Length: 132
Ligand SMILES: *[C@@H]1O[C@H](CO)[C@@H](O)[C@H](O)[C@H]1NC(C)=O
Image (cartoon, rainbow, N blue to C red; front, side, top):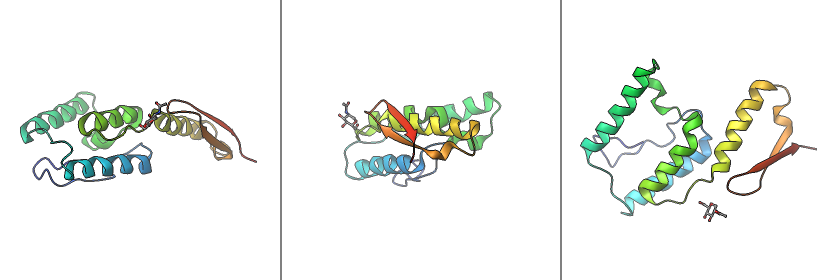
């Protein structure tokens, strides 16, 4: 999300397989916290080493470089990392769980998965019920 060569430039919303609205909100809060001076970024060199490690891991798994923005089962860990780095409030894990569950339901029941509504019970858990 941070342009390592111009580390005051943030690219918000450049994620795949994530709840986009939630991701954009978290990234915007992260960028705002940075602009307000709530935290400082690591050095360019440190960020480059981290980015390269991520890119190398993708290559080693035989995946394309474009997957660098793919969150999927790492979505919640991503939000946890944003909170750890910047001190922004944590995206409740339940939101990634709902996205993940809904994606699975879409695969299994393409014609009926939209018939349900999700109810957040707490930061960790949800239920769902058939919409009337
Ligand atoms: C739920 O998450 C919010 C946002 O991170 C946090 O402020 C709140 O304390 C959490 N609630 C519980 C019960 O952990």
